[in-house]
Image (cartoon, rainbow, N blue to C red; front, side, top):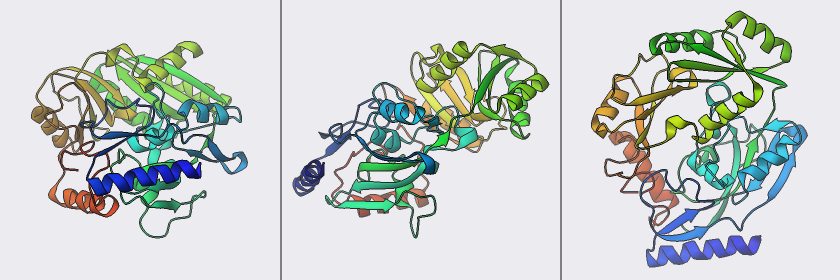
Length: 352
């Protein structure tokens, strides 16, 4: 494995000297996400395998090319899980999972992907093999580079290894459904979120609000009786939440698909197109042919931002435009980690 790391370092050093773009790629499951794809492919699938799994310490360390399915199978055997429920979108790898920084239905209750990253090993744009963080929660002194890598889409470096915190799987889960108009659904989702209820996921689509409860069997049963609604069978519930996480639910067919992050209490957004609401109201998926400016203005008016998640035409830019201050920070980070500007150019913003 050390020979593979040396090969990666040499490839990056050579590319930096030649000013040749490098496209870091694992399983290719998220090639659709982000900006343009360009450069010579640096394939990480060969650097694979679980390095260490301390079940009692709730810590898993694995190489970037390890299939996400392999990691989840290993921890599922011990009754544990990746609490942020990352989507696979096919043959996802751990490196791609962290580089994309995407979280699934449980995110509002359990936290985002970056909240579970304890440490990373990476190669920067100079070809240097670097380590940040560690394998315990309280290990950061100075800038938290480990979590900075989460969601950077490979623009700052090649992720080699990741240490993640895992959590025990809840002993019981139940999904309830409620027929509600959109404004009432948003109101109820926020009311439920403000109470000490074992809610692990929520979704609203086509006039139906779905609420997943997770925890001790007795607690789940007691809360379900208080809330009412229609109980959904276990198999149907699994299919539904998997469909939301993997975007195989019929709502997600077609494009363009926008991802709007707003305040959870935001009233129904008056933008043409179909919507699916997650995370207690703070995530609004929008299928719409409406122009980018109208959509982004609506998100900004709600105190949030809009990402063009899936589309054939990305000329409007994928991610919400940065403020001058944030743009300056992004440029400085790119300059420090990838001074030659060769790594995954254009995946976040056109200029870097």
